[in-house]
Picture 1 (cartoon, rainbow, N blue to C red):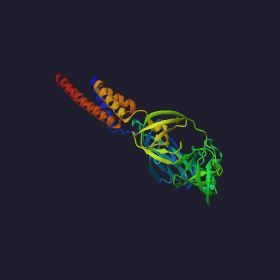
Picture 2: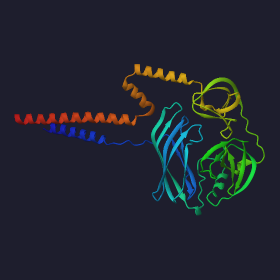
Picture 3: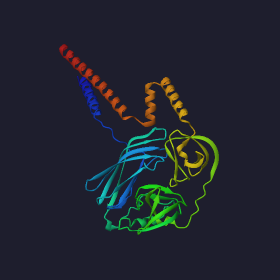
Picture 4: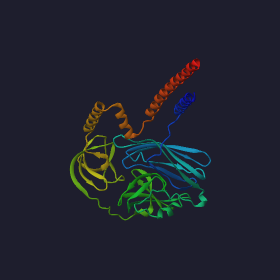
Length: 379
């Protein structure tokens, strides 16, 4: 009798576990991406939250949410596309309430240049300390810098970002003295709209009381720290291109530039899969190509030696071989090894397991009851 009671108790335990597993929800795992935000900003100032993506990331998306100390919140969708300045890996917010604000990035999806999932559904969190303007707090702790030397002068310039800033109008030609970030506003916490290599010529339209300069950049108004601009023409750092002559193909839609910089003039456009002739490449990550009889430049990472037809044929052949030689279990194992357990697949499997457990438990329960009844009648 004790043995039977133990069996019934064990069956009931399995039944409870199976029922509970049916209600387990998916939880976002910690993302492989990093979350970059300033440690401290002033009330009323703008600050940037960025995803630090792995080197092989081609595209990414996430929802960035800021929850302020008074419970109010603001959310923005981040959409990143490699090589496309319209889709950066950051979004900006305005610090509206003094106190500690929680920063959350959820639903992080990252893919490589072939469309393969690197991550699907990760999350990251952080915090920003928002202080009153009178405390002299600054957003200069942002990990991004506005020159390659990480000059400490940035913090001095930023300390005045949130005071009353005035610009004196000028109209002059200036040149960058180093490779420098170009910002949407006059703060290192502002969105980066591009970069300019040493010797880039720009038109300066204003000089700010906080040390920033207002310039015209790709037809828009942007800002650069004044210490990296000079009215004297600067000699660009030498870039050596190694000669070559090869057929390559664009991995995505991308811009062609007059020089090897995202700040240089756009002179053309490549569509995904378009064939080009590369005549040279440099260690700075740029390629020189022949385009409609002109010499233009494009980022090397946006080119590949494989033609679209070859890629398609390889994918088709791989699918045929896999479907012929592998079982469904092996295919599922390969998918899981590449992108992890798919949420929908996981839910379906758990449902099937739950149904099997319930049916088995019911059969064993009624069998045990029948067994007890028969033994009682014999007694």
